[in-house]
Length: 97
Image 1 (cartoon, rainbow, N blue to C red):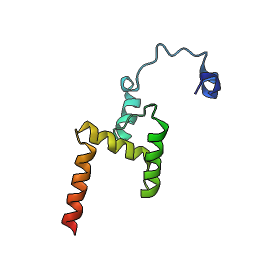
Image 2 (cartoon, rainbow, N blue to C red):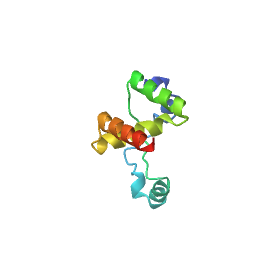
Image 3 (cartoon, rainbow, N blue to C red):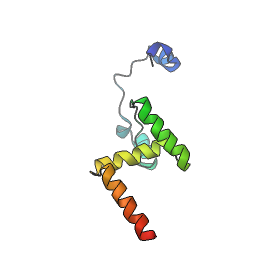
Image 4 (cartoon, rainbow, N blue to C red):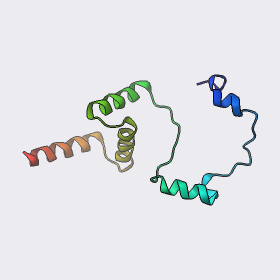
């Protein structure tokens, strides 16, 4: 999105935030962040086809695509591969049968 198409950018483009403090440096805001569930809001770019896959999976399971992306990132951060997840799922299904 170009800045010129963002109405919020147009509204605040003349404001100077160079002296702004992070929320963690302001006790009331830090408390709100701590109470919000240990998650941080970020902006990131994801390929359209990847996002479409997560949205379809979320729709199929009745979940939320952002939660699915977060779970996938947790698995990667823990060193799990897709093959590991598939193997574990198969083991669970065989044990349940």
